[in-house]
Image (cartoon, rainbow, N blue to C red; front, side):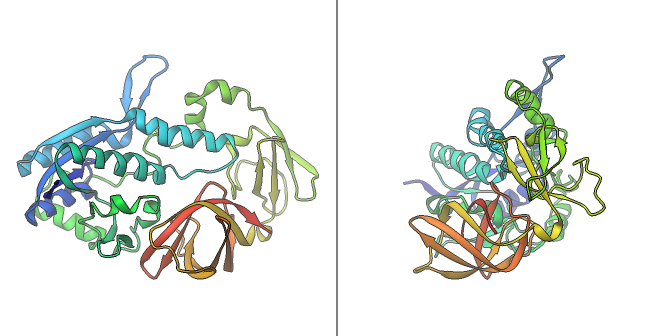
Length: 362
């Protein structure tokens, strides 16, 4: 039997995970800090290795200092191979298919939760914990939105299995960000002033195009420029390679039109990009697959609040199932529904489940 009073806490070196482990200690849990080393880049000239933002030397040292302060053990575990397999390879393959992936979703379910549970078993710890802004309902084995609506991260957690949810604690889900900062300051935590991380942790300069070129230069060299077409099929310009564009993109198209055009479709097979005016970028219907239900509805169709991107407020939609395929009809037209992105379903503040957008139906 695993020790239910022992918690393996994911430590990023930021303020959120620092407060999470400190609060768990106050609650009487026996905690162990663990930092997962997920990625590093190699300078093509100097051949020097550089850790990604989320496991930089400063971040690891910050995690160690917090654990030292609390008198608990801290370990750094190399999971670069797992991160490459489940996150980076999927990220690059999706762009080669003309889709826009959500790498944080795969990272959370496969790498963070999956590998943390593996390590917890080795440490005889029943629970794992992270500094995510979300809450766990252990009675229903489901996830709820974080109290701080501006920081809520439940959208990124839909892919986690119920078995892992049962063994998860989210200590700061009941707090708002300013309360977390205040707590860290009052406790004089060394990480209290560290700014929040931004963008993709493994894309060092924030430009995914540069990352693709460096990560798979042979494949990227074979992607030539092609035609930009209007919705009626007329060629109106040239693109520099379909991987340089995402659905909804307006800038960088090089088109001289009096009214802005947006990327509506990316076809890697024909190497073409279709653009349209903004009013043509809305759709009432999309399809989705790879659905993970945390609380599956008893019957279909059913209504749920639905989000197609992290920072959206969500809208009511009717979800229907047919032989494992899902069609979502939105009450209000949605702008730039993007294949490869996550679609997530809620009942009030409870996360019902989510999946991957296949495309929109016009």
